[in-house]
Length: 285
Length: 337
Image (tube, rainbow over all chains, first blue to last red):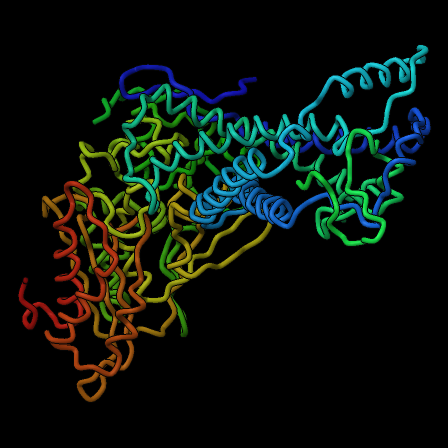
């Protein structure tokens, strides 16, 4: 069972041409399997989450009723990227599933939108947001170890509540960043193979072998995104995660949810008793 | 060009005697089956060892797929009817001359005696990069070797190209489109009928096929309604060798004229794109106009709008412009420009 399809170039060289398309279904099944197993685990086996309790900081700050979580720019990026990603996945893989339509034009336009939105996000997150908030820190790693020990029934200290983003969220971001960059960079090169308004078509830009690797990388990243998007949508609609999803729409989460999930010492929000204004956070992203 | 090996890869030869049996075989083997009609396209693929099907389904023994059946409102041509039969049948010569003319222009007499109407409309493209077995888009790869600065693309597409620039080589296809023919496709799931122009597909829909036939499906017949019977027809084919060649371009038109005005018309060209193109914008533009050289010239210019020549096929643009001009104004009226 080959994961990559190979062909013989006109010069007799064996070159990869793309991934084996059955990997589409592998990714779909992997994504669906994850959500089924996870849902069963949470429903029947998971123990209630426990965090170390530290009320002292609450005496020092005041939490607004609406805790700002995502700025309008961050939310716009998220939904534009999500729309572009769904268009990319459907236009890429529906024809492989037998639904034939004129997909190439929609695909590269959605790819351009995704690329532009990611470039915006990189600059926006680097210079206008709390860049470090999405990256795992030492406390995340230590708490992850404690949670693992507890899962295995071993004695361990209680973990702290999360900073702005839980570790799982940060890890997902890391994976989607790598896969997303792979699909975008390879996709930009592939635009040299078709006629667009951006580049002069040049199929000789790279060697057959390098082109083949580009197509394989694009394909692997693409099928990987199927499972990643399934998992992301699953978490987005889980009842206990809905406040987070709502915050990606409205920009804020409630004080109760914030205090239940997040550690004010690790994610500091502006304390202004007089203001219940929806956007009161030190780190808006 | 590919080397003809003459020794075909091993396959199982199945020779059904009925359409039902053929459908059953095709359903059983799906994409592992290769449908053999006249064999003129098939044997190239097989002898070149580019295609190595598990089974070859030879339809020559299925009598239901042969013959021309004339009734009051349509003529039905079995898909296995030879091109010679189509070209010589009285009903086509008298009422549907464009199809008789197109069929008589296919290749050589020997090939027309063997080649079938179903095979002619379902044959694969002649792009030599593709037929040589190179891993191009149409073969499932990721490049078009013809659409490169050095690619030999004299015969390739000027319209509708999307990554692949191969063209459809059928002569009868544009004639069937202007006659508003219906293609009868059968499989074990039942029968479906598609308009002639919808039988062919663009590379942006499916880059690996020229037509809508799926594995397990069989083109059983072509039905020609009486709509265009007795119309004023035109067919012209331009090829490198008049005794035997595929078209560089061909054009077919059907026209009803009243009071020296074009009442309604259909025009189609082939070998300009991956599918035969019905020129609907031209048909609309010339309605109500006299069928003369001026109208033809205007129609010719309209027909080639959007054409994108490759390195070596820019000649196809004036060629197509002039063929459309002649299809409307007639050869005597329209001079080459």
